[in-house]
Image (cartoon, rainbow, N blue to C red; front, side):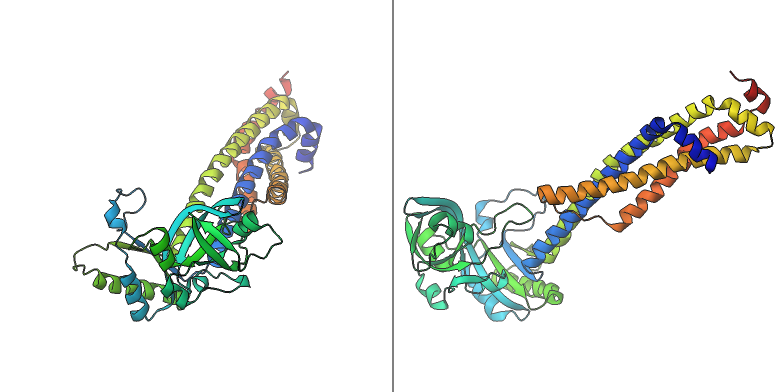
Length: 401
């Protein structure tokens, strides 16, 4: 050990260059893992904040990712009657709301902003866990009358009225249709997908259908299961009721698609795991290059110290002693580079979180794996030079110039 450390210290710069590949490789792996894990946790938290027991019903059959484009009529399969039937017959659903959407300009005086109008029932706020910071929500009476009242998000409020103005009771226009603001929603900020969750207007679904879009079908239906554990039972129940309402035969496929928030969470987690794995594998190639660099340096070191090896053998050093010496040097270089790489990677991860607000989380197992990999690299790529040194003929080694 002492001889190995002394040999490394006698060639500080060369040893550092050997470590550099390991440092960069380990740091890259740590950073990629931290960003991937942090993004995954952030997505899960955002989806959980919206409620893990949310169920979304969309028109049209489930064609999966990249499925065949469906004709417009197949996307009009959800009706108000379906919503009414579900509301009356479901036992595993606590809240349910039909949804109709429209995009356009919201205007107040000289101020305007592009936003999305959501036509919902009063239960939508409970499903999506929206809170009202000023004013009140609309009522069932407003829905019956298709009242031109609305709730607005913080972004819409700030763009149309300014930050310090209470807009409750004031009028705005959406596609030339006047709406009276009856409430302001609590801010939710940006989602993990970079979408502004506060850039919206919520109004009775009957108002959007009759006064804005003039349509008879629903864009979707949002539900909330009684508990997270009952989500699968709720989906099965919703499927049965809708198939009955649509008079579908047993062998006919559904003309609607039901997705749960849990399913979305699992899909996003799986996608992030795949992306992270690809990034980690790409970063890990630098470790392979670093290992080759260590082997190259050790081979040079063996050649340079041929006379020293011969002298040690002549005074009683065995092949295993010489082999261990060079193996220890290789492992020290590799593990030291790994430790410095972990420190650098952790620092860069915290810096990315602090400076760029990137969600990062360093899993402890990635640090343990880094130590193990660095040790393996030290042994694997130090073995050949150590074996070469151990097999030298001491007489020839001493004569070597």
